[in-house]
Image 1 (spheres, rainbow, N blue to C red):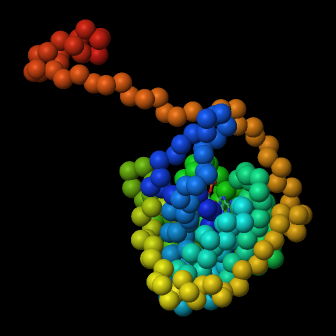
Image 2 (cartoon, rainbow, N blue to C red):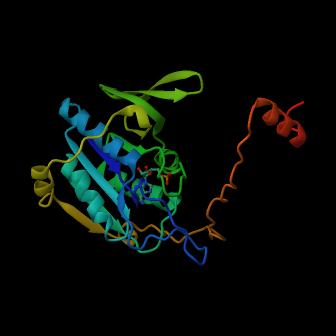
Length: 249
Ligand code: AMP
């Protein structure tokens, strides 16, 4: 069984984003970039399925600038077998990514595609769902447990007030939530070994996909700065102030 795992290179989650002076986007020059955390969880889940003998091959794919190769090498060092880099110097929106992933899925015929539930840079939470629509495969989103048995996958999803369990027929699309697993770190020997694992480089044109953006970002602004608070002497003063503000009666 083959598993396809799309991984995105994003601003590292520890880095505080800086908005460009002209307000056109987030400044990505000279900042640490890493694999989207939900995609690390997706890679980890695929590796665990391979370790259990359920999966036989893990193919990772990334769409982005040439440097996304580093992200793919990280996934290979964690334990993926093979990588595909689809280069685009311009930003590819979720529909473009989903169309490219559909083309890769047509070629690779995976039984399972495991994506992150969302990329932490744009917070779209769209790609997995769009890919499910384009392929016509079932989708199990926000997965906190994944069990493959025969030709089906059982996905436990975290929903308001509990969990929901769904059974999907393979091939299927799963998107990962935070509690699915704790991703491993790649060991130094595996980082070295990953350098010689196969990595194919393609372009959107190779797949006949038009990735021209459909959206224009009008403005990106920093969150409003919080104004300084004040200290009150006691509860009576606090209640008095709240009453004056109309918050308490
Ligand atoms: P999004 O819909 O943008 O929030 O992304 C959801 C998931 O789709 C991510 O966690 C990745 O698994 C996948 N994805 C999105 N963009 C890319 C990309 N450029 N390259 C590879 N995978 C991507």
